[in-house]
Amino acid sequence: MKSYNLNQAEDLLIGEKGTKERDEYEFELKLELIGDMIKNARKKRNLTQEELGALVGVKKSQISRLENSTGNVTFETVMRIFNALGAKLNLKLQM
Image 1 (cartoon, one colour):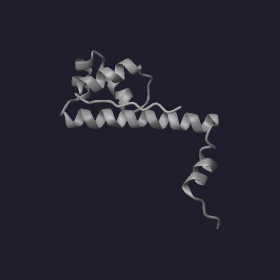
Image 2 (spheres, one colour):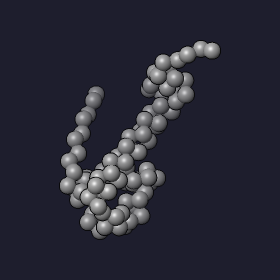
Image 3 (cartoon, one colour):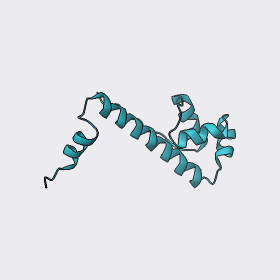
Image 4 (cartoon, helix red, strand yellow):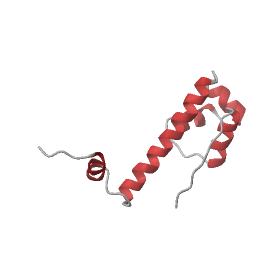
């Protein structure tokens, strides 16, 4: 039985870096991480999705879709959510 390191397994199962499949996977993973961060911060503040939506000016369903990474959301909405949660978002751009 052949063994693989993590990078080799990712290349085989997801696609090599730079391929469309790999880029899409990594993009979706980042969206899931943002959704998880919002959900954790909301729960830490003891807010329901409905209460957070009211603070941000969106419906509960939009908060739910964002937390579950099932819908499109604008960057502006993400920033408003983090602002309403009193959370700071640090961005790092790599080129």
